[in-house]
Length: 107
Image 1: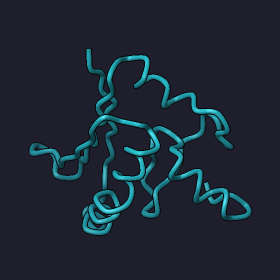
Image 2 (image 1 turned 90 degrees about the vertical axis):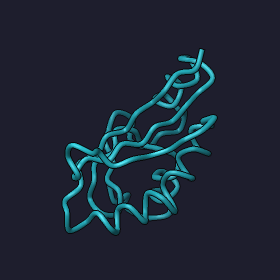
Image 3 (image 1 turned 135 degrees about the horizontal axis):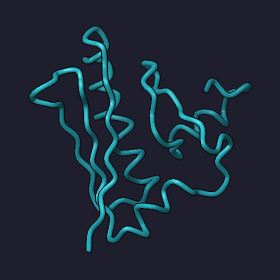
Image 4 (image 1 turned 90 degrees about the horizontal axis):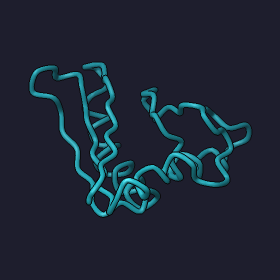
């Protein structure tokens, strides 16, 4: 049975255009690959335009749960921030790759 991982972000109106471009062009494709998700999509809330959701589909609950425990995480249990300062609930491989190229890690 498919399982889903949902990420919710609250984005200031002044940052929405940049956040939207970054999430669409960079983060969603990177996270989908890093998570080994079957599919991914995103949307802005109709009732609160500051709320953005990203949805990742996995084959089963075990595959979805595995993204929270990937080996080699330099900051286990820490939240990370995207380039616009939005907090992310998981330290994805796409963020880790950026962290590992900078010294010290920016998050």
